[in-house]
Amino acid sequence: MAKFFGSQIGAQFALNMNEINCHKSPHNMKFSIKQQSVLYEGFYQLDKLTIEHERYDGKQQTIERELLLRHDAVCVLLFDPVLDKVVLIEQFRVGAIKQQNPWLLEVVAGLIDKDEAPEEVAHRESFEEAGVHIKNLSKITQYQSSPGGTNETIHLFIAQVDSNTAFGTHGLEAESEDIKVVVLQKQAAFDMINQGKINNASTLISLQWLIINEEKIRKLWLI
Image 1: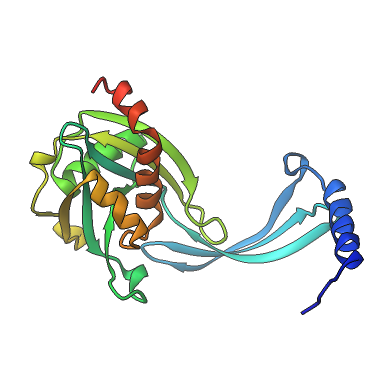
Image 2: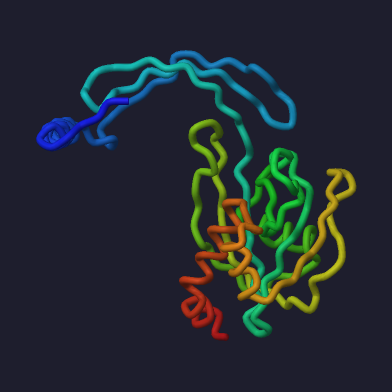
């Protein structure tokens, strides 16, 4: 590993800054897909792509990447502002099998696999997975779940619900879903973030958003 001391650090920093100053804006940069082939097609599809794109130094670069093609997804944090509770769900996740416990606490979620608006999916999945009806629905944000390897976009919402109607197990038998409803005091859910008991992106982002924006969402919903 290279080590820099004294003036060497300043020289290296100046060199890096000069490189940054000559970088192109990504808004003016171009790419093209030269080749795309299907490696696997099942519930998801895996493609191999050859892509040529501009570099920040103005040169061209050709790369090969594998891309997992997924439907976009909708995730919904169910919040009861009257009882100050959140409704989460718990289910087995194959992607978490290397963890000590692959049964994860999550927000309600579902794929946009039909001609549906994200808001329609939010309503449908909230009933299918938690047995609740949405009173108010507000968009939090949308983001790329893992852009280094998949094209999936997550549409993240917060919804007002009556937590007294949330209980039991749910899920579609045809999709082998086995989903348990977990109702928590809001602060208990916040504490679970720091305890590492909530460890998936959509749930972390939505709960942290609620920490920051609770007053705003209560005003929006006239609570």
